[in-house]
Amino acid sequence: MAFCSQLAVPAHAFGISGAYLAARQASFVSDYSAAVDYFVQALAMDPSNPVLMENAISSYVNLGQIDRSFPIAKRMLDGDFRSQVAEMVVLAEQIDTGDYSGILTEFEEGRTVGPLVDGLAKAWALMGDGQVSEALIAFDAVSEETGLQSYGLFHKALALASVGDFEGADEILSGRAAGPLQVSRRGVIAHVEILSQLDRSDAALDLIDQTFGATPVPVLEEMKAQLESGEPLAFDVATTPRQGMSEVFFSVAGALAGESAPGYALLYARVAQFLNPENIDAVLLSASLLEDLEQYDLATRAYESVPHDHPSFISAEIGRADALQAAGNTEGSIKVMQDLAAAHPDLLIVQVTLADSLRRDDRFEEAVPVYDSALDLIETPRPQHWVVLFSRGISLERVGRWAEAEADFRAALDLSPDQPQVLNYLGYSMVEKQENLDEALHMIEVAVEARPDDAYITDSLGWVLYRLGRYDEAVVQMERAAELMPVDPILNDHLGDVYWAVGRQMEAKFQWRRALSFGPEEVDAERIRRKLEVGLDVVLEEEGADPIAVSNEG
Image 1 (cartoon, one colour):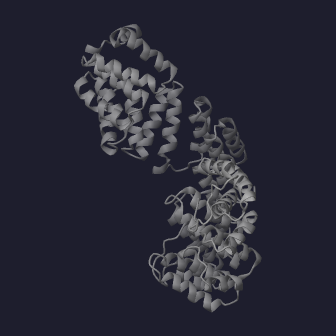
Image 2 (cartoon, helix red, strand yellow):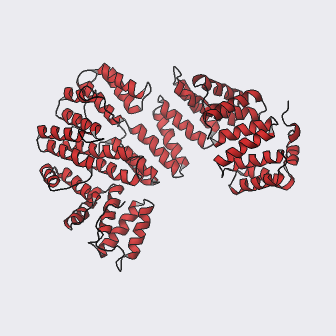
Image 3 (tube, helix red, strand yellow):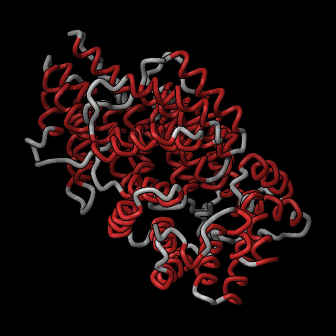
């Protein structure tokens, strides 16, 4: 990530090209550890090069080693090179040392990190400098800027709460002061803590239920339990100006996540994490962004840094399992979830996540009893629980327990009628088993209507039409499915079958060859090769299936 606007010294200077090119390649794939090593090597040969300095700073920050970038950032700014990331790092160092008067001086002299950071950081620096009244005015100034009202008001509420003015903070967060605010999950948590400090536990509980539903994540479950026991929640989102500054960078990171390159949002998340290591939401956001960047080892380390006794530890372990899975360490991923499930047998999200992990690894026999345990934890099934029944149904179907699987699929539809995934899976399964073909056709038609651009559901419609002997109609749907997902081996194989059924044998063979080129499962590949050798009619005869002309007429 580069922000430098003055490229006075060429980065390809003689003697550093090898290190520079290696650093650039490492940066391109977000390998921040390698990038730092190579940029530092290059800087040793050309210490005043702004391109090298800026990229080294960015790599250190995204690696989570912000303090090691301090000297480079200072040198860069002292050399009159403009750089957003260098300004960000120097600001972080001043916050780290508590130099709030110096921060204010720098802003007066023209420092800029960005419009949102500048205004909020100045306001929190005034708080740190003991100028509370001036700070509140500065927060109001941010609120008056186009598009920044919610940010300015939210941070003003945090500032008021940090000095014990919970009534003033609640006035803002409740919307009574300036209208409803758009706040993140962390903002809602802050408001819950403030309400608890005002001895309004019922209102705090209502806010959790209204915002997150009846089954919130573990950290909120713990807050609910504490509130229900009558024990007040401490306000700890931002109790100091330093923590307030952390929230500034976290706010920006959260706004950027999903809207900009992950590496850019990560810069802000890492600074937030540096300024307040107890801001676990910043840790989790950093880890998630690292996953987006396919830096799974760094993501795993971030997840592992969450203390075992923190309410977010469970979310962190689930994230760690996901990162291990994405890195190809399926066994390690499942082991993390098995340990977590053993430690927390009463948590639905943990049991379901473990069961899903086993199912995705085709360990269906093991997945079924874990889904059983998860469903036992649901006292009153709600519409959102359809997915648990659906997932157990898939596992049951894959181990040959069709009657139980069908019951789960239908129970899922009872909870969430017309759910496309369930309609498609149940309808397709009935087609394959040659059961209830008219009902199966209706189910899949409803699913297609709900998701007309879903290739697999469209394929299912074509396949049931094929099974019903309505070959011309099947061709239309299969061609549509292949257009939506042109490189899927199963869809191309199916399209070849329906082409064969309508006498378009050359096109059928072409589609089967395409299917083979996309790497199907070996059992499917063997069948495709046999079809290319002898034709679909012979294969059906060898399998004891009905011939095409009369296939499934009964």
